[in-house]
Image (cartoon, rainbow, N blue to C red; front, side, top):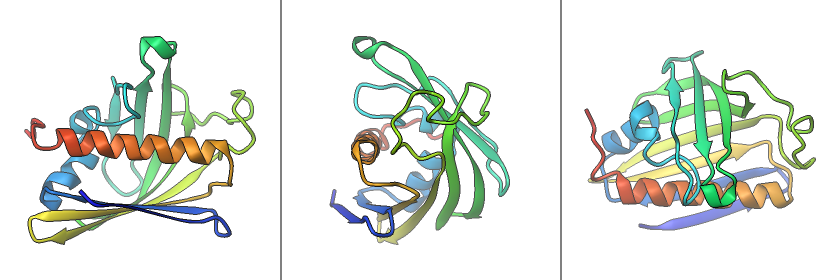
Length: 172
C-alpha cells in the first residue's frame, strides 16, 4: 500500500492519497454501504456503532464513532450532505459536527478549539489501477493547528483499518 500526503496550508486544503490492493468496486462499497463503513470508520481503537446513509445527491449521512473505554467511551457524531455522486469515480460532500440526530453542532459551543472547522468539504476520487484502487481524499476548510493534525491522524488510521479489513468484509 502506497501512502502520500500533500498539504497546502495557504489554501487550507489537505490531500491524502492511498493505493489499495482491492478493486474500485470493493473500495467504493466500503465508503457507501453503512454496514461496511461501521467496520473501519474512526481512528485506531475507536469503533463505529452507528452509520446511516441516504445515498443519493442531496441525501444525508450520519457517522458515529465511539472512543475506547480507556479514553472515556464517549460517542461523537458527524453528518453531511452528498453533493455529487459519480458511481465508482467520485463523491463530493460536506461534513460537520452533529448530535445523534444529525443536527449541526457549533464546534465552539461544544467546547472544541477555535481551529476546529464548522464545515469541511470533501472530494473523494476512486481510480482503477488494474485490480488496485487509488483513493484520493481532498478536504477543504481546515486551518493550520492541532485539530488539523488530529484530523490527518484520524483519517490515516481509518484508512489503515479499511486496508486491513476490506478483504474479509461481508459485502452482501
